[in-house]
Length: 137
Image: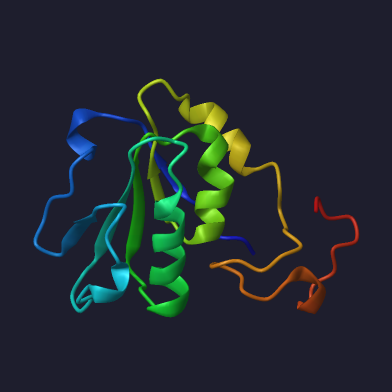
């Protein structure tokens, strides 16, 4: 079963990381130097939708560093990015103000399975025990 990313409509209340166990990580920072003990959420920023460094940070945090807390995408987050964000390990995405929440939900439902492995499902579909016959692959 694929993990679903939580979507949050943009508001001024949810654009800044707050709390003592929340980290806002700049997109040029190396996540391997973070002390992750006690951290519940890490906000990764997309300053422009064309800047994909936060995807790499998310993948590193999930697969190599074993971070189990919430990874939140913030900044210039477009509907078109949601599938890759979900596959990179993000739990939550704060959509840019001009993005429609209903359209974003539909975008996430287009594909049920992916042939390649990813941060969420490391095993490729051909190595899994489930069948893709009749699935929307």
